[in-house]
Length: 237
Image (cartoon, rainbow, N blue to C red):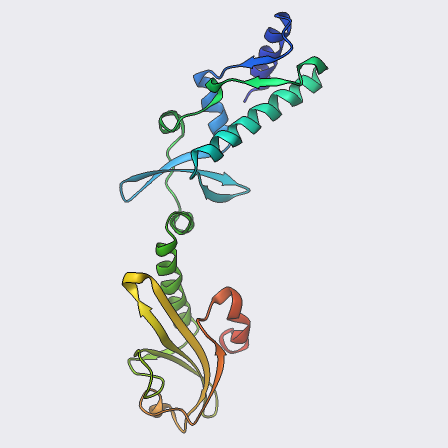
C-alpha cells in the first residue's frame, strides 16, 4: 500500500489524540493489500480458487482463518513500522476492527484473475487434492522411466507376481534394472513401482521367465528418495 495512505491515517489518528488506532479498511485499501500479498484467483475445471505467490512459489489460500491472520499481521506490521518511523511511540497499540477483514466475496471481486502455467497448475492441484497428487506423481514417474530409456513389456517379473507391467533397462551383460508394478488400484489412488536388479540369460527371457538372480533396490520407488540408485545408469556420460 502507498506510504502516504498509511501516513495520512497515522496523522489523522494523532490529531484525534487517541492512544489506540481504530483502523478500518476502505475498498481501495483491501485491493492494495491483496496486491501486496500477491493474492490472485484462478479457475480450474469450473471451480474458483484463491492463491498466493510466496517467494515465487504458488500456495493455495485454503483456510479463511489463515488468510485473516495474514492480513491482520500485514496491517499491524505496516502501521507499527510507520508509527516507529514517525516517532509516534504512543501508537504502538493498534486495535484492528472487524472491518479489517477481507471476505471471500471481496477477494473474488478484488483479486485479479491469473492463468496458471502448467507447472503452477500441477503444484496447485497437488495441494488441493492429495489423491490427485498421487495420480500425478505416478504418471510423472512412468514418463520419467520412459525418458530414462527403459523398455516396456506387458508381462510379470516372476510367475508369482500379481500385476503385469515391466520396465527394464540393460546396464551390463545379462544385467538389467527392472521396475515392476507392485500395486495398481486407480479407484483408491494407490500405485507402486518396485525397482530390482535382475539377471537373465538374454533379453528375450524378461517377462517370460523368472530372473536367474534378483536383488531388491527400492520398494515403491520415489524419484526424490531413490534416484541416486539409478543415476549413473540413466544420465548421459
